[in-house]
Image 1: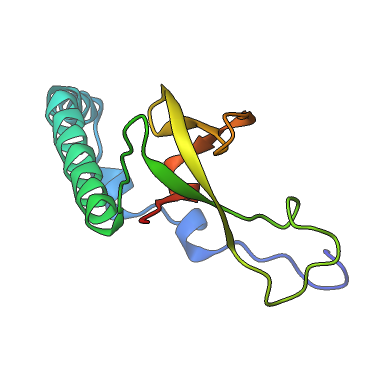
Image 2: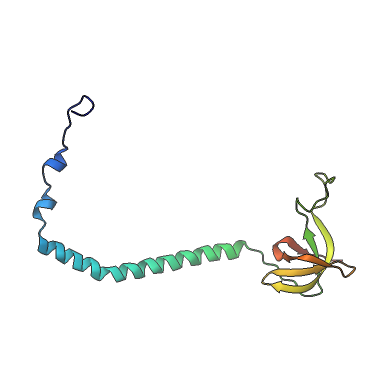
Length: 135
């Protein structure tokens, strides 16, 4: 008795299936050998699918990405972030500030900026947050 009801055994458990009845140790060993032989092929197929999927994702990203490159001496505008805004600035405050001069290339897509007076900004700036300034 289970919670006031009689426990019933499902038919599949009580009566073995034909698959279970016809299985022998020799056929089981043969199936295991076949699966082991096909294992390398399955791994290679999975690797090929994974590389193809990564290439599709890379093509999609490269189509959408607008990479920006600046040379030393170029003039750029810097994006104004919420934490760099003045406390009394409102909704219609400017979203770009500058111009700044590119002083040095700090790394892949990172730049060291200086003001027009020659004062170097303390942080490196990513090219995503910069745009070219035209006089």
